[in-house]
Image 1 (cartoon, rainbow, N blue to C red):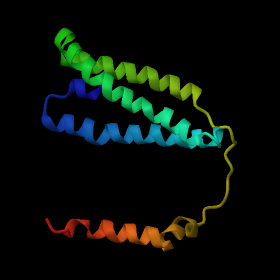
Image 2 (image 1 turned 90 degrees about the vertical axis):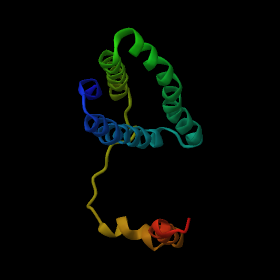
Image 3 (image 1 turned 120 degrees about the horizontal axis):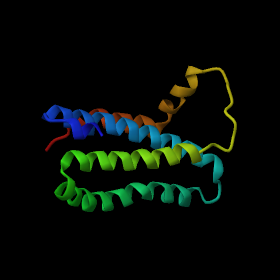
Length: 136
């Protein structure tokens, strides 16, 4: 909704490239962590259905937004999309829940660094480090 109030480039940049991804990652990670507790055998199918929502949005929004901009103008088109997302997010917040109760356990920092010692992870980190210096 903040995009509708922007009038300079950095307003759009701030809203679309910083704030939106933070919110999307919070919603996606919470949904994925709850989904894991409900499905075991058909987990991949459940993840596919959950992630297909972004694909539907990628098809519908480019059709819907230009038509709304032509009819009500840019600010109200963005506000309408924001209110639509707000209502869908409210429904998701009320319906998504974990099957298991949260368990409290002490934080062990060795757990966080255990994966770094695996050869696959070491190779990935090395390649990510060398990516900026690749030729071409």
